[in-house]
Length: 263
Image (tube, one colour):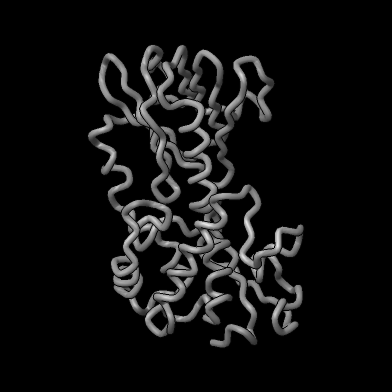
């Protein structure tokens, strides 16, 4: 699933090409909005909120927000009006067309339109956003520790605690902090330092298309433990371990070095 920095870049892309421009055509390819037409409206801006995207549109019928979420496979692409799409048309869920460009949302996990005044109904539950103006380290720390018996990785992934961390960052942050990902969050030391590292990682990676937590951008050298199960730890050489958790339909892998992250 895309992390907060990926979603931030998607918002910046849409904002760059759509904001201030009139929509000459709109196509919402989801049943609940299939007959909606916001042509003639003007895109005000697009912002990210954790892993959520909010595209605000002023139309003669009102002020609307297009709320989208990439989930596992979604992506936004901005193309010329007559460019060939990089994915099949059957995967398109939203098409926003201006005089010069088409913004196409492929395989989006969430597509909904709502009055802009009601945005909080879809993002109000989120914790402080690591890449947002509302970032509050103290509030995030308090939320993480509200359930001290919860495994660290689960607490980090809960967007109600802090917004923007996905499975990759959760694994990498636990490693660089020397914490076992499945140990209770209440027993973790240095959580404030972990939060500062989280913000630093996302701030750095939001400026580049290739994510890295090691600082090395070469293929296979970008991560400490994520998706490196059975490979030697970059610090000590111990094989990286992986454990699957969660229900089958939402199963996730957790990675750690048993030597550098003792339980």
